[in-house]
Length: 425
Length: 149
Image (cartoon, rainbow over the protein chains, first blue to last red):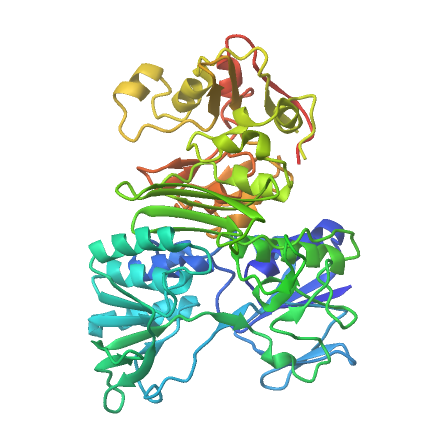
């Protein structure tokens, strides 16, 4: 079998390993428009801030591609897919045939039209190694930065810039930072810590104009009319599935490439995984893009196994994020902002002074979400309880305890998980 | 492959597994020196859980899963599975994002907050039987073949 993978991040890595679990013979070609081997994409803020060097960026052992016999085409962009002829076309005109194709192109940063943006030199997005390298390379000329967007990408960009002594203002449209994962309490704790570090966080506002003559930026005007002086702007509003090259391919694209539980698209022999894909969510079976690292790996693995003829089924994507911001570790997973009503039960513990917060969301006696700030140890136990749909009502009083552990679970569960007689689920 | 299993019915909550783990991963491999004199003393990679004043206790540890959730969540590539099936953490490569802590359903990855590195059981590569198992005074930890995930 001739496998072709477009994209070279974690979904592709999962797929390569998945294919090789089933098929040790087939040829694997990976095409990436970036010029780097697979790297820890979330590490770019550490690269900018100086906490990691370029040497630490590669995600895989140096011999990975060779060991898995992968033909790696870097710096090449796929411009279209011809699913009838089973081939992909590259910029420059080359054509590569496939037996099975995986679309693992990830996400493109979303940049809305902002007045005055055209021609400005120092407007950046922040999703690739090259983005971080460019900003770092220019950093001697940067003093004040406005980061548009207070999500994961914006906050990490702000932290990286802060570490190299740049003045940063974050502008976020929602009423709190990290609105997708955090609730008001969590957002407040982190925003307070950021302000204490000299980073301005403006909520409920957004940039409508970038001011300055020619290439030069002198500041940003917000919707409220406020003017924030700066010389550099980072647009970090979000990412969108990088699927525009699939126009005319016949492959169904909604917000992302629509896939079933084996990561198959609407077209035979074509699969998709990772941030570009729109797969089933864990709780309600709704199809939606879920741009998170662990899920991209899992989807890649499933796609790889399926492409090679193995059998495996997706359990559904569970949203989860772990991010440390200004020394506050934060982990959130599942449903963190449930609709008000009887359906959900929410337990919280808040110690604002110590920056400790725990929030547990239950739905009909089962754990469906958690937000942990400060004390995040063993958070994965919650992820396990969510995934296994464990009835937690009998021990729910212990869930807010920082020492919560298997000791609070029914003995049968421990036997299953830990004893030599048992078999882990 | 062989893994470490714990027997809660005979565990007395003495925490010697944790002491042995810290000692084994210290520079001197001597408990007194490790605890009193070594800078950056290692942290234990097994966790003794206790309840009701020690009436119930047991030691939990890494399952070295066939499909490790920690590995899939690791954004830096610090976690890899070796040929023997041991899930290894390269602490040099680790950036302390705690994604592994978020993902491991066994709660088996520890945060070394001071070093800003995650730590996990490495099955004691220099020993035939892991230190925690050897140190357990009443054989509440056993090292044997099994079939976790």
